[in-house]
Length: 454
Image (cartoon, rainbow, N blue to C red; front, side, top):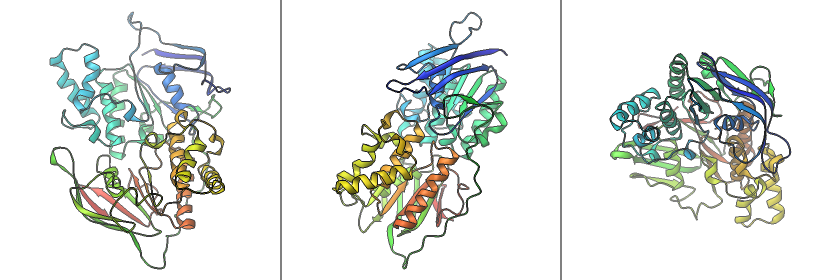
């Protein structure tokens, strides 16, 4: 169907950085084909995607990006879903978000409703058009943005780390959607650490090797022997640090997200909460921490009701979106911030900061701005900042989002180390119930508005 984009000897260097993040890259994108851009965390995948979309402004460019015109049209329609969907959402309701692009294209209002509904059906997000965007899960928001691009019929669709946000059901729907797009002549570029679930639709791999250049084949990370499940965490006596009784939460339109949730978390043990996108995993963690109030039921956490002041230093929370808890000027200052706030001595602050940075494999980033890092690197910074104070109970919302296999393995080993060596109790969420079998002492699964222990 022809080449719709060419990259010729393209290089890019960020401001105040000497080494280019991309160096002398050549590539061609053909209509009706699916390309997968792979590489380790921080290798420049998102930077290249932003360059193809034309969203890189500050920085030094070399080479060129050539977009041949079609039928005399001077521009090519390129749609891109960023790795963090929340920075890309513009409106307050599902229907308005998908219709926004149509309004900018001056599509007749009478045509919009059916096109919006068709796009939402294509990604499996069949919500009412007036459904609030802020009530969607991260995975649902990612699907919403795909629909908002599909409705405009782009010639090139770029998806940054869809596997980090979509559950198995969402990935299955994405496979079918990609197949239809390819058949209609749309080109697709996936930036993906874990492309296994999308292999059937991928035609070509591009691998960034970490030095800004392309290597042959597909990035697979380091070869590791299969991980053995860690030993179960044991305590002399079962001492509950969290007790949940008959908890219920009502969402949009008085529809229950989940109801009659009851469970207990014992000191020093590891727990996983699994479930598909939109089942209420994040909502549950926010209720446990006191950020949301349930409609009924009771939570007893570390000896009392959820209270931010009382739990200060004792409860740690890693949010699903790391950008919501990063605010300092350097990575080192970010990790040290909670330690200083808790009044630890300067020597202890330096020691704990260095330990957490090394444990997360980001010591080399200590003087860099956390706001300029990749999504996966930001997740590691946020993780280091909640591990450094060594809280008694740690709530982690999808801690592996945006990480390649090597970093994911390292994070899982790190969490188990803090659990076994420091007695830290942990409760974390996963999209895939089959992920990391044996790593939790108990798995709690959300499905159909109920919590089931496995």
